Image 1: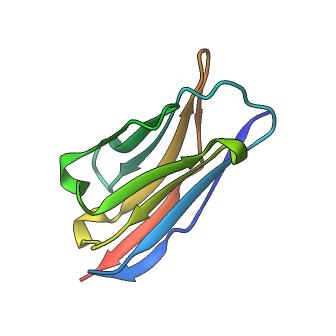
Image 2: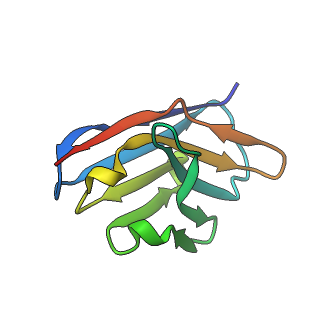
Length: 115
């Protein structure tokens, strides 16, 4: 059974940085894309950043220039480096792995940015 385990969330002051990690446990094959989503209180879940198997990336406009997504295919791990954090980045962050057949989600990690 595949599980995605996230780490790296926490409380940080505005302007600070955090690095999220998400690693897959269990047998998972042919991951096509990895991504990070977030859901703020009272809002819908939104895509923050995504990365394909060949390294192409895309970002939400609100995080461009501040966040960087990367992946380690050998470790089935995706990272999100978050710099210049703002209070509006406060949310639960979820990782997602897409294979040809399945979509896997992490349990979520809280990121809180204080002003």
